Image (cartoon, helix red, strand yellow):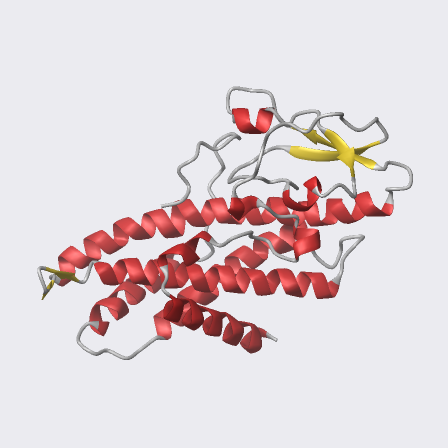
Length: 266
């Protein structure tokens, strides 16, 4: 659905899901819960568990890059980033569920369990293996750059400018390559929307420098979902792509689920 662009880095190593057997059983329960809902089944146990799984997994990515051992750790910022992860997780689960529900009927008739399960498990591979791994790596990279940005600010009297560095190899996207070597002051508005990563799997980096600023900014605009500087926005994700497939009521429901999740863990 949304990770079609070629990754600019090497193939990511698989992020092993903890207790994979337990997760497989959770998915089995989840898709059966969705299937049973067509006949009025009211349980939401597996739905809440999958939401919590997304949140826990991505929160681990946040903790890899930004945690209480960080020199510039800010507890309020960390909480805001976790709140954003909760919202992302709720939209992801709601989007997954909505797509599964679209598989329940064909020609106004409920499909057999075996057919529904087959399609559901195929979607699970996409959503909960491929996509979730990419989202985890993105969370780690973004969290790392929260710490980096705070160090930039602390040293800005010595190194007032930032330099964009792209990786030069066959996997680098041309749109990212055009930014290579760009130098701008740390307080330039460019960095509000273009702190790395600027796409899924982006390997580009930003470093601090006292070199003179560039005279020209290349013609480049990040995609809306990647216009972000997490240290400033207090968000891991820019626009949340899963939100795009939900209607207004579904969005409100997802937001309520995210709020309840945060309350439960507080």
